Every structure is written in C-alpha cells, then in structure tokens.
Image 1 (cartoon, rainbow, N blue to C red):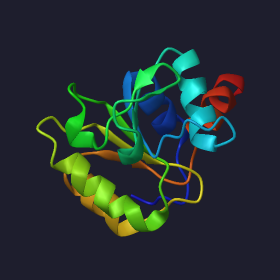
Image 2 (cartoon, one colour):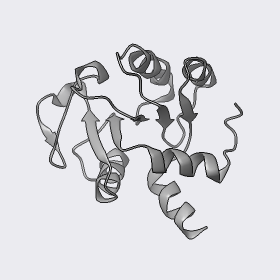
Image 3 (cartoon, rainbow, N blue to C red):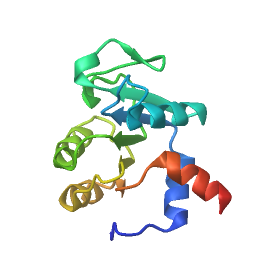
Length: 143
C-alpha cells in the first residue's frame, strides 16, 4: 500500500471499527502530544491502554500503564505508536508476536517506516503512518 496518502474511507473505517487502543509511548506529562491524544481518544469513548516501560503499574489519565504490548491482559484492536521512527519496526514485531494480533498499526505524525508497514501488512494488519487520530476524527466529521 502507498502510505503517502490515504482515502478518507480507509481512515474512517479504522476509526469506526476499533474500540481498544494500546498507546505505545504514553506520557503522564500533559504537555506531551501522547498525553493530549490519549485524553482526546478517551473522551471519544475509546478504551486506551498506555504502554510505557518506565511507568509500569502507575496510571496515566486514570488508565493503568503496562510495560510492553505483551503485558496487556486483553486483546487490542489498534496499536498507536508515539515512538521515534527507528522503533516502529520493533513495535510491529511486538504486535505480531501477540497471541491475538491487533487489526491496525497506527504511527503518529512524522513516524514512518515503510519496511515495518510492509511487514505488518504481510501479516494482515492495516497500517496508517504519519497521521494522528485526534486530527483525523474531527477532520472526517467535518467532511
């Protein structure tokens, strides 16, 4: 798939079909984009599970933090990645190793790794890169 541009229907279908989101790189700092996006998604009714190995067992926005995807005790529909691009491949590997794979890998603004995307897609996952659901949700609603 070409990740330079996405049809609105592709993005909308993902955002309407996912319910549980693992947010990798979650931060408790309200000034960080991951915190704002997590709060936005929670406010939109998504179940968001923060992943940050340095904050295991603590809470971010009232949600318990897990150290890695494999530690989350329930299946997730989407993995939303707030890590530098060089870590995206490892996050995809972690997602593919889960007993119940997520349906979507979503990487935030400026996070892109085409080889990681190809790997995820080859395993049947949908991929969105260099986009933010907190931008896409209101943009699609206005369209």
